[in-house]
Length: 99
Picture 1 (cartoon, rainbow, N blue to C red):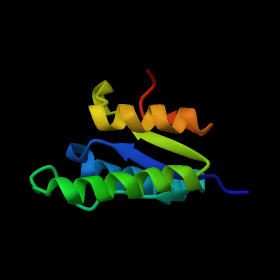
Picture 2: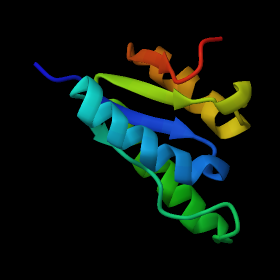
Picture 3: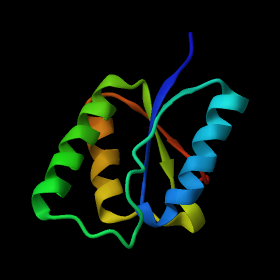
Picture 4: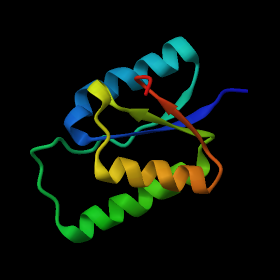
């Protein structure tokens, strides 16, 4: 059975996350749920940010694992919260770069 993963990471890595998602699907045969809608220059209202965060939590709930894009070791505040949430609900946490 194919593993379903949700990509988590800073939107400053939006371009890299698209490439990583393609690699995960083509090389590892993962089913990837992506979350890249905006780039780091896009400004969203607090309400839209809250909506996207809630939707992203649901994506974490329905996947087998999260795949953390931590380029050069960077893990932002929101991604740290997503890791904590994933662990709390028993999801596997995979990292792009080893810690």
